[in-house]
Length: 404
Image 1 (spheres, rainbow, N blue to C red):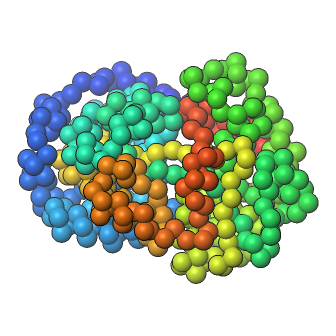
Image 2: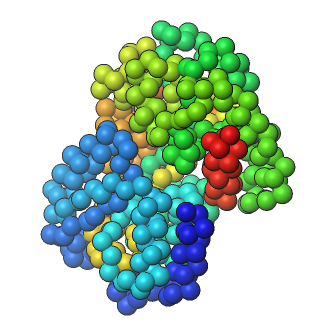
């Protein structure tokens, strides 16, 4: 699959390059009021990960209703994993298909890097969005997993990795990766993680990589193949040694984060994990998790990142996509998705830039007892790794863990 993807990237890059069409130039030259006017009465097809019922519900209710009310735009959520729609874009670019069926994408990490390298994204467009210029710090969203954004992505949320546990079953969670390993050995069959490249499972893999190889700092200066070759064996040795002590003796892994949630909720395992700090509280509110569930982070740190939206090079409704991307960055949308009963997604905007009443509304959001305080999360925060490391980790996990 990866060989085929790389082949398509090369074909796409050779096909038409990154040159702008007259239509693209026209959209980028319009002021936002003109874009909003031209987008009225249209449909925007938003392709995005569909693995969370809560996120899907927030989009299908709040986002769709507000976009219709404010802009007379119909938002159609299309569930599709990012590697699938990126592959589709690469194929369309190589085939010279100038009008596609995707208008907006939820994308980041290696999928964004691959898309940029193949020239299949539209932009730069974020400086045309009034909410971005009003409420956001461009420096905080200048890179996606270390790769320059250059205005081709609009930030709309932040996430951070946490572990989940039930205090009724596990009174005291591990504090370090070494303690986690001890706990797994002492509680055989009670721990697992989603199979990479599932986003949460891959994040856990990167957490272990940082913690078993001396921390994140050494990886912040771009990809270093020799460094990876030297350090990665320690990560897979740690994972491999613990594999027999996992749920199902490590013979199989949950296919995604939702499957992991189900195992935890049913009591088949005693720990879960999420890339959303308020995920446990959201599950408590929907009565899926007991009220005794809490979250924790390890002393070695908790990875955080920003998630973005982007526009395909051949989107048929670029104006509508820009209006939707702008709405998702609005204080109203950011506040709505910050509430755990809706999603619990961390805001990407700068709350300090808001008016006093808006700041107060964010400050008053009850994140619940299961959510760690922002002081704890901030102190534990470590940045994401370059996409090249991520891709190698996922490939080698298949070889050294799944295949053994």
